[in-house]
Length: 191
Length: 109
Image (cartoon, rainbow over all chains, first blue to last red; front, side, top):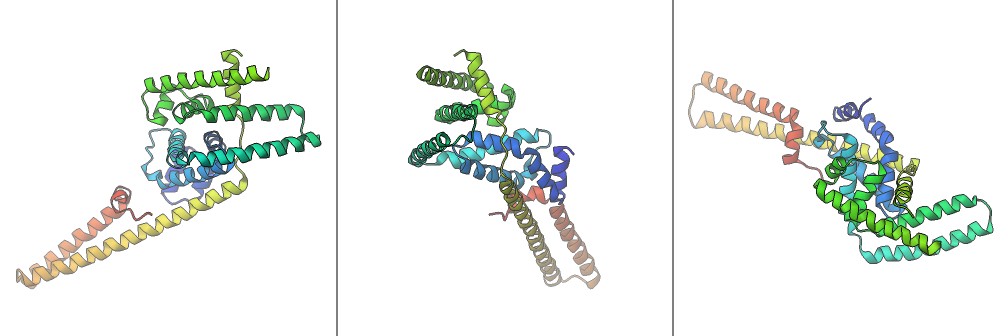
């Protein structure tokens, strides 16, 4: 069943259509929420808030455009509205505790041989990349997430973010440049 | 590190498979259902308000036709039913195009 048919069904009063839509897009949306936010708890909240906004505004959805892109637009706008306004000190406190938790986790891993070494290195790499991506300003970070997340075209990203293509290209280039420098620094430091 | 390698690392990082917990999905589906029932209740409330408004207009126009213009009973009855038909028609139009009127009469919190 297509998205448009499911939306029509929901608007006509068939409630289970919402369950099917959520099931269909849950992984993709959750992945985006996870990359946008700084921790799992925020990602869960963003996931729920986005779905609620989607169903609240479903009667305003233009069926000529793609539902998936509309969903991403709502997710990013919700993130910008709500999660981006958090005070800086709160994130600093969270980072401090997450570092402590990391140490405990490392000690636990060292004392047991539950996880294969490759997995630990992979996880650490992923954490480093997340840290570097999260350190970028949102105006560079969000286009980069969308660019690599599903390899959207410039047109699609500019539509989702509602910014001109020229601005988008410039932000993407600057963001990628900063990110590459940051990752090169990590590699030089480690290597 | 070459640019292509960094591109590959970023592509891998952003395409990591992630699944929300079943509890989160269930909770979300529950919230959506609550929202749906709340919206349905609000639609009913709006229709009731419109019907009350329509009924008031029906009584008011009958009162004015009878007292202001002193019409005979046949003309009065015809006009009375004609106007009430118009009000009922308007109520039905508003109900079936409630999505357009939604923005103006939204009772959502």
